Image 1 (cartoon, rainbow, N blue to C red):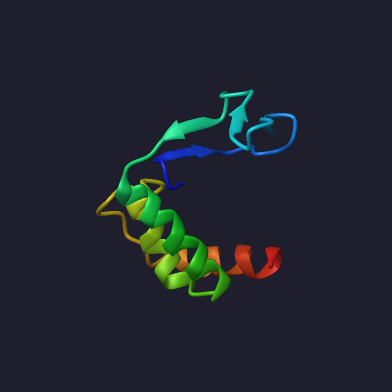
Image 2: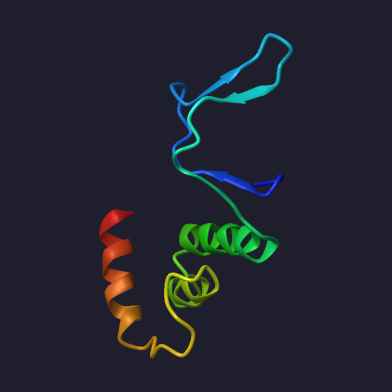
Amino acid sequence: LDTGFFHADPHPGNMIRTPDGRLAILDFGLMAEIDNEIKYGMVEAISHLIHRDYEAIVYDFVTLEFIPPGTNLSPILPVLGKVFDQAL
């Protein structure tokens, strides 16, 4: 995230370390360039998920453009809470 690139599938088959210690990416299929708003939105969403702050996560999803601005978020919150409570 530091460089503005996000790799959604970082495993040893997609990345290797070169002999001089640099990261070499072998598969760019699930990569995207992200701006600072999305980068910080991802960090905030992860923090909110860890703390089970589901109300904040709903707003993070708007920031991350998963949910369009102006959407009524009140019916989403209880469902999102149930999904994350079961997953965590």
